[in-house]
Image (cartoon, rainbow, N blue to C red):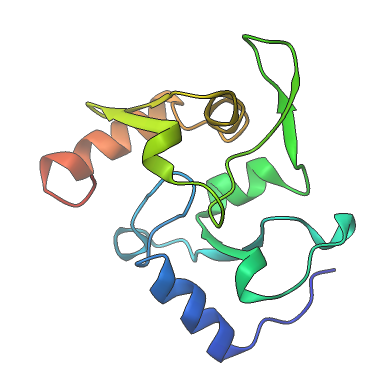
Length: 136
């Protein structure tokens, strides 16, 4: 069970994220699904409900991540942490190529893989948003 996140803290997280998923960069304004306050380090693993440990996440990324902290990098076979939106820069780990998010680092690879950034449905959705200037 997650700890309550106050309205003031939610507002700070949303503003800092520019109302976009901090993992896949999907804009909250174009979806009917509510975005979620995601614990980067889950409470299960000792994470706190603080501004520094919360990220705005779309339901797809948040549900794919769950309470996991990382996965096995398919290139190195090493346990690798997920991209951390508080301590890492998105553009250092991912490149947008058309509507596909290309991972550039081990952290990027495990995040893109587990969060399913490039599932065909998600690519199609991003392509549509790119075409109307709502993603990028």
